[in-house]
Length: 498
RNA sequence: GCGAAAGUAGCUCAGCUGGUAGAGCGCGACCUUGCCAAGGUCGAGGUCGCGGGUUCGAACCCCGUCUUUCGCUCCA
Image 1 (cartoon, rainbow, N blue to C red):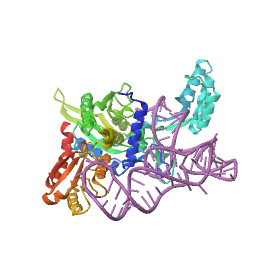
Image 2: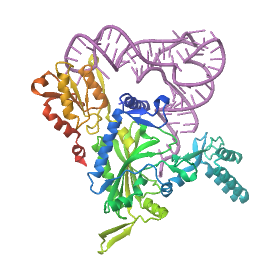
Image 3: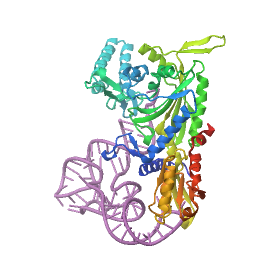
Image 4: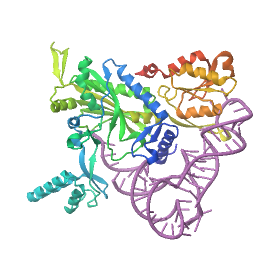
C-alpha cells in the first residue's frame, strides 16, 4: 500500500464536501452572496439524515432510560448565566499575534509582564503608570492604542525576539445582541455558547415537576453559537452548531461510577448508528477544564484525523453551585435514600456527569463513513461506483419505488405500493430514465432499498427488492415489504447492542 | 490570525504570457427502449467569485476584497 498521503486524505474530504453539495446534504450558507464563513445549511437529504440521528439519540436517552427526560430551553438566557458558567470572564481577551513566530499572546498579559519587569528593576512607578494607561485604553476599546503601547514599550515576542506584531483584536467567543429597542449595556444578551446552562437553570423545575429522584438526567438538543476565530474542516467547526447533550445528576461521590458507565454507553451508541469500532477511540483529557474533575472525548477518525465527536465530562457541582451563589436560589436536592448508618443522605448540590455530542460532527462522521468509492471488474468491464453506505435507520430515504417502465400499468401499481408505505417510511417514487440510472441515483444518496415493479408484479403481487450494498435483488410479496423495511430501520435493531 | 494554493455552465475541467467563452458528464422535453449511469432529436443554462486599475480591447496583467482548501495557530 502506498503512503497515506496528505493529498489523498485531503481529496477524500474534498470529494465528500462536493458529494454533500451535489446531492443535497450540505450547502454553504448564503452561497449566492459568496457564502458566510463557517456557516452551512442542510439540504433536502441532509436534514433527513440529521433528523434521523437526532431522533435516535433522543430516543436512546429518553425512551431507553426511565430516569432521563428531555427539555427544550431558549437560546437566549439571562446574562448572569454566562457569568456563573465562567464564559464571560474566561473569554473576553485582547489578543495579538507575532508575525515571525506566529505565536498568539494576550495583549494585556504582555503589558503586565513589562510592568512587572519595571517593578523588579525598581521602577514601580513606571510599571504602575503603564498599567493605568493600558487600563484606560482597554476600557475605551482602543485596541490600536494598545498595540502602539506594546510597540512603544518595545515588547518583543519571547520566541522570535521581534516586534513584528499584528493588530490587537478582541477575542469574543460569544455572539451578543440587544434585547429591546434601546441598546445599552444592560440590554446586551448573548446567544448561548453551549446548551448545558439551559439544563442547569431548569434543574429544580424538572426535578420538582417531574418528581425526579437522583440519579436522573435531563436531555436536550439545540443550537449553540461560538464566534470561532478560525473555521476548518467543513461542518466540523461551525459558528452555529447543534448539540445533543444530557446532564446526569448524581449523589456526590458516585460521579466516577456514572462517568465510566456513560462513557461506555455512549461509545456503544456511535457503533450502533454504524460507525466502525476501529475508527472510534477514547481520548482522555490530561488538562481539565475549570469545571471538570474527569473528561474524555469520543473521537472518530475523520479524513483529517481522529477528532472529537462527543465529550463526557464529570462537571462536579461547579455549575449548580455558581448558579446558587449568583441567583441566591438554593440548587439543592434532598436525598431520602439511607446511607450506611440508616440516615438519609439529606441535602446536597448534586454532581453532574455530562454527555455532549456535536450533532453536526456526528453527521459528518456518519457521512464520511458512508462515503464509498468502489471499482469493480477488469479492463473493459471496469466500472467505478460511488454510494453512501448508511445504516438503514439513518438513511434519508428508506426505499425507492421504481416501475420498470412507465407504461403497461406499472406506474399505477408502483403508486399503490408508495401509498402503502409512505405513512411509515420516507419513500421516493421515480419513473424517469432507465432503471439502472435510477438505481445509481439512489446509491448516491444512500437509499438502502430499491423496489422494482415489473410485469410479473401485475400477475402475482411480488416485487424485486434490491440491496444497496450488494446490488443483489430478491423477489418478495408486496405484503411483506412493510415488515422487511421496518425490521431494517427499526430502533430496536439499532439498539439491540446497547 | 499567519503562510500557501484555488475560484470559468449544476459537476469535473479546457481556454495559446490580452482580441468580448468551450468540452464531457449532468439537467429539461419528446421519440426509441427496458434490470444496474442505453441511443437519438431538440433545448435551457455563464456579466469567467466580487470591486477597482492598466489597455483601443481583460477570463487572462496589476491592486484590493470575499469564499474555499491545505499547513501552522486557536478551540474554556
